[in-house]
Image (cartoon, rainbow, N blue to C red):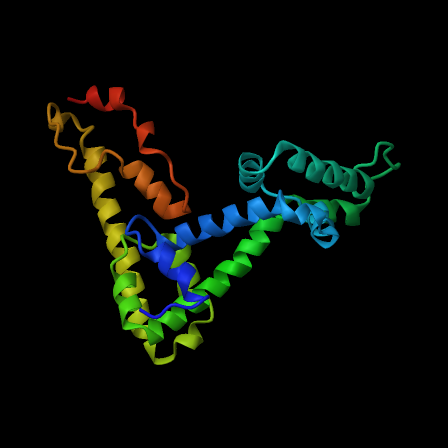
Length: 241
């Protein structure tokens, strides 16, 4: 498989056959951006102007605190809080709320600097995936061997510049649908089996048939976020037998 500066990160996230490769790609991009924001970007005024205006969602604030230094996070918050005070919630309130400012506040609350960046980068990565699917038979094989494609990234892969796939569109759609649809059917079977284990008619059975973590795996498929399997309540499951 030929590699270049564009394909190397794609190959890296597709090599492990564990979960959704596009989720791994998103996680990689998010961590790099969070480290950048709390690192070298601190000295870039143009970036600070954007982060002051947009802020961050909880997921990315949590990531920044985990990956960056506390002083870096405090400095980001200091200027962001100051802008919120100046633009939306001054210490001395006006006689009546400004509707335009309230609308702008609503937009800011739902915005996130990293979310915007990741969305754009993921769309670019999808275009590279499409190009590699067309030109590299080895990548097509690697792609088809993935464990699954989660629901969110199934949508992204099938709705981002798909015209670029040309005559390969149908083949790509079939392979992606197999990864998403095949795993969906497995989840349905596993969740059904899990629920059936609580039926009194199955009392005494310990045959979980791989369904013990079906809740966690279903949430990962639906949302792209992982819940640790060690969160399974063994005591609750043992009460069934």
